[in-house]
Structures are given as C-alpha cells and as structure tokens.
Image 1 (spheres, helix red, strand yellow):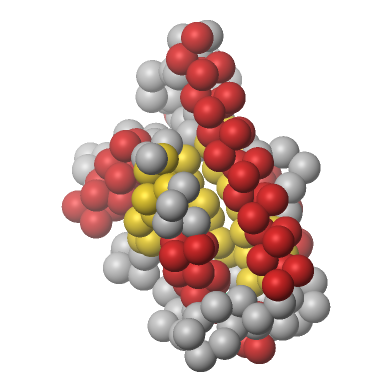
Image 2 (image 1 turned 135 degrees about the vertical axis):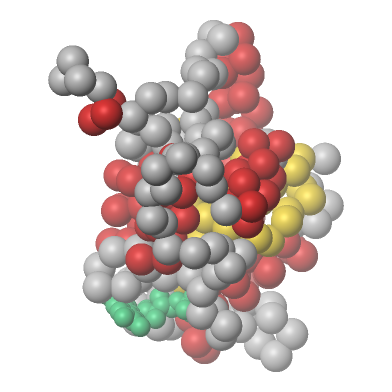
Length: 203
Ligand SMILES: Cc1cc2nc3c(=O)[nH]c(=O)nc-3n(C[C@H](O)[C@H](O)[C@H](O)COP(=O)(O)O)c2cc1C
C-alpha cells in the first residue's frame, strides 16, 4: 500500500481544498494510505539565522520524507497560491528539503469556473526551484471549479464525471510514483541537501 501525504494549501477552516483531499483520502483508501496534513499551524517564514526550524515544520518535513508521494491541493488567491502555502515551501526548502525528488500531484479547488488553474501553474514553477526540486507529474491538472457547490452533505463529489477524471488522474499518479521512485533509486540521483546558490560567494 502506498503512503501519501495530502497537503492542504491553506489555513482556512472552511476550505474546499481540504474537502477535496478528504474525499481523495476516502475514495482511494484501497490504493493508498493518505495522511491529510495541515500547514495552518506553521508560523510565517522568518529565515532564522541559526537555521533551526520550528518543530511543526520539522514534523511536516519528516512526514514528506517518509511518504512515497505528495498530493498538494491549492486554492487560488490573486492568480497565485496563498501566502501561507508559499511560506510553507520556504520553510521546507530551509530544512531537510524533503521535496527533492519527491513525486507530487497537484490539485486545486476554487469558487469560480477555472478551478485554480493559474495558481497550479505558479505552484509548478515554485516546486521546480533547486531547493525544492520536486518531481511533479507532467501534463496533468485536476481542476475543481465552483467548489462551494461541488460536494454533497457527506463530502462526496456530486459530479460523477469529475470523479472519473480524478480516478484516471490518481491511477496515473500511482504509476508515476513507481516510475519516478525507481528512476531516482537506479540513478542514485537523490541529492543531498542543496546549499542555497545565492549564499555562495562564487556567484
Ligand atoms: C484573497 C483572495 C483572492 C482570491 N483570488 C482569486 C483568484 O485570483 N482567482 C479565483 O479564481 N478565485 C480567487 N479567490 C476565490 C478562491 O477561488 C477561493 O477563495 C479559493 O480557491 C477556495 O479555496 P478554499 O475553499 O480551499 O479556501 C480569491 C479569494 C480570496 C480570499
């Protein structure tokens, strides 16, 4: 059984992105054990001089390191990801850098029709930074538009076509995780912690 982390990309208590991850957790329970993780308890990134990070950050970093893959669900704020999610990535790039070579699937929910597509594009770009260097599943977007109306009272997605798309997407991700983790192992390409290039005097 695969072990995944579902990362809720917001600190909002009523998040439809959280509901989407909870749906994914239940719907695919026979394929993966998905731990839905919060970032709402993380402080804003403040670049501590001693590089010691808060224990909540280290806990999340450790969970990501141990997982076979990560599913991140992001809202869209002003055509990008929420500041709290960006801050979480800043912390995670400043710790054990658990995203390096980690397979990632991106989903998103928004109140409008577009389902967070612009935020998802930004998220890909951020995860490509050398100190994050995630292995993001290519050519795939799971967009949940009109997310306030998307779930029934039991938290089930109402639109069965959306569920079919999600199933296809999730099956692709399970294969992508196998292929990526095999590639990473066989190439021995999992790199040790990256030093921050901008702190190198040679540049
Ligand atoms: C500050 C703010 C900015 C937003 N900007 C956008 C936006 O640029 N595009 C969009 O489709 N929705 C925007 N929305 C509405 C979001 O679709 C919605 O809040 C969010 O994606 C839903 O995620 P959640 O249910 O997980 O909180 C914005 C909402 C807030 C509060």
